[in-house]
Figure 1 (spheres, rainbow over the protein chains, first blue to last red):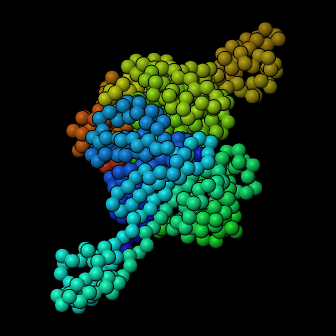
Figure 2: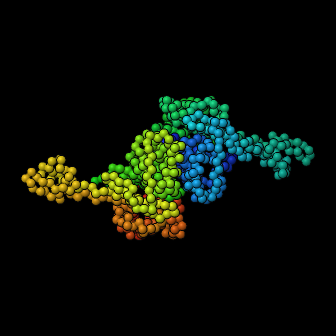
Figure 3: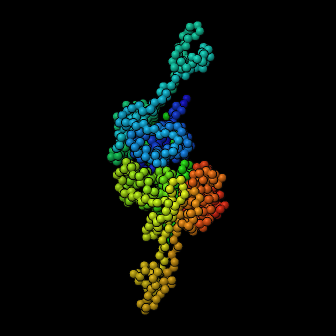
Length: 304
Length: 304
């Protein structure tokens, strides 16, 4: 079975620390990689993870605070030096193009690929990317500037045909695709063999939601209901909830409350304030509300 | 005696590696710090070195390739969040202001300090900074875009007055500064005590030169003659000299040849191409020409 893998490149917040770079992660599903946010040092983290830099074609930027997009110009510039030729698509608030275009003209005027901007409306739950295997939706969040999360949703996979049934009924190759899609099989005698006998169900499609940066907002719950994994920012401890409210961020307890109410299967927390040297406190606080919480850590791969 | 300390934050070239960030270093002399170049991740390296971020007021940018300046916006943004109030001065090619201003307006419009641009002419050897203790000069280099190195030069220090002479001649406190500056002392009997008897010479002023990025250029030799330490780029091995010429970079052998001809006391090489996993080869090549060569390494402090 194909795994869905999340690589956290950076899960610090605005101020980087010795341990955490600013926000960036790579999600890999259905043989494709997608970059989510691109804080300063994203390309360095990719190198440190030995990640190929030509496997992703789409970058999703949650909002235009520097710790989520300052790494773009360096990454694009390096992809140019590495002679990438495939177009690079950036999905972001329309202002990003205005900010990045002059830099691209100055620093990257000779790169051998196109950077294509896809403006999105962060205030809207919207289908912003689709291919034959998956869909990506924007999720409106609540922050000081327009901000959205992203929902990655696999499309249903085909059913698995059973080897022994192919042999037993002598099913010709030409029929196999249709059977995977749900058709019954009719033997040369005219006997109808039900699809359920010939196949087993595919793994259910996986869903991953990225919600950062955001204040506590129950409005996101319908969009992320039951996802296999939720990454939710947990910038502060509950004891710093005043600061959390002022800055439109969430506490670890609030992240876990959202996970609980949305009935997600797994929660990963991140976007930690630099003030906490002991991030276990954040994990403990979240686990007090939602047991299946994992600590987001830079340079770590999570199976969704 | 006050040391002159060079901290290399990044000595990679355009493509960062697992080991080397792009160009950036901090020079500390006469109780002041100055940042030279600011590639992506400079603020992260500072954190990793536990460097205070409020001790420097001037940044010198050699040229406008991304690996020497992409870290500026993140650094400035973070200094804002850390509530820096002192002005920040950036010495660079005039185009930097045009590139950075729109970013500062968008991302840093509420920072509590001023960013002041000081345009420099990279084609000219010129005094670009001066205070009571030191001077900084631009050194014209030879690169694909206008590029300059920087010469940091301490002003002569005052002579040291000898404790035992103060006591012996009962020299009043009011006279001490003048004696440090070279005056003789006249006793109450009218006897003239020569300054040489009262003082010993100060340590000679130190000089540090940063030359990156540049092709081999003997024109820089007069400017860096006899410096205590020269940092010179050594992007390539001699065996890759064709590529070196094409890109207007230097080989390790060329860096060492400049060090030898300029009769410098110590050479540090850096700006290594990402193609070399074994940087000892670069060091060996340089040492073959100039023995007192040190390998530049990220996160390392050198005494000048």
